[in-house]
Length: 349
Image 1 (cartoon, rainbow, N blue to C red):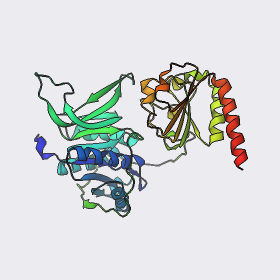
Image 2: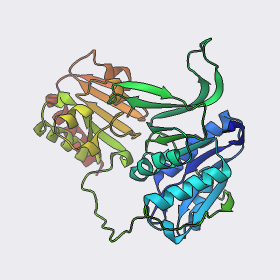
Image 3: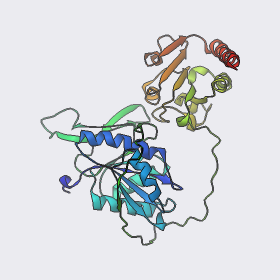
Image 4: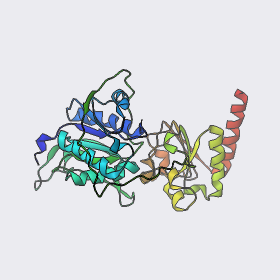
């Protein structure tokens, strides 16, 4: 493999039902930063689907300089084999140095299969990406390689952080958690170069047939879309005690979330978990109630605009990242706070 042949930062622009997933726009924002560090002029989005050309302009507005479109009826709905064939073919044809894929249900299925097909590595579920030297600590016994993609992800069940590189193969591939990277402010009227490419599709034994698609609305709130989160940890004490957080969230028109300890205790579902092994959130206001502030949790919420911590332990690490902190018994503080908020809202009419 000649590494010099591989140039540029590419992202897989996931779409479902001809609507771009938010992760595609987040990846474009990060790709722009990586491209600048590599002195690359273009960021390329790879758009797969059927009748999806209408999505090109939105990709351009969020940072795509070029969009490679593979438009074919075989790609109307996500199926592993045709999507793998299409993306692997784009890689072999256009040779990107870096390819980013969202760590969604689709991306977690597609990414590993594509990396295997093009004979490169994949770092899954990344929470941080940057360009730097590898190895991280120079050693006389090993050549230092510059301008490598350093991919950081939780390891060993979220108990430690690993930084991984792929210095000897290309492209450098990573799946990235939704909500971790930031979109750029859209550039209205921006246009991208459009490249239409189709490798052709021939059904084989790996093709599946979609018999029926059943869509069901989730009964669990999307905490990544919430502007206000009221998050509880083990210190809340019990599942029943989350009623105090429910009342506060209702008064603020916010959403309840939780730490891993709460999920492990069976008090709340996994979809509400914030942290390295949960979801990364960026609300305008984040209440950390009865949460100690372990690094695994902080990594999932430290980018919140305002963080308010309530904990009876004045030495809890959560106060190190909080903008405001209250030391005391949440059983007394939350009802009083909820009451004051309701009174203030009622006074405003």
